[in-house]
Amino acid sequence: MRSAEDTQDALRKRFPGIDARPVDPAPSVTVPPDALRGDLAFLRDELAFDFLVFVTALDRPADGVVEVVYRLFSHESRTSVVVRVRLPRDRALVPTVSDIFRTAEWHERETAEMFGVQFAGHPDPRRLLLPDNLDGYPLRKDFTHPNLIRLPEVP
View (cartoon, rainbow, N blue to C red):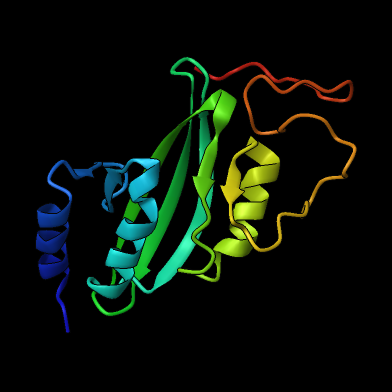
């Protein structure tokens, strides 16, 4: 059985620039889109990160990117890791990982609807939550809709 410390050491070896944030003790690494599938398979097969907790995204219009976020958990070492992929807002396309982690199927569909990220190769890209005639992506910061009431941002 791999300890949490062994897992951290293996993560540092595979991802030399790995970042541990004080708000979230899970290490976080940003990978290029073309390395995502291989890196997630490595984390699953070599480091026993056997559960994909969620897939979501962050809209960063000031940087011109949408950041797709994957959080994995290892039941063996009882640790988590966060993997991020930065994509251009105008071409947010990343390969699906639903064949690596089955739980990604619904998470990717929700992320596609809410943030406009396309998951190439997804087995069922139909909308999950929103009506087919809704234009735009509700969780992007530039989303507008006639019934939307914007609240002031809290500093």
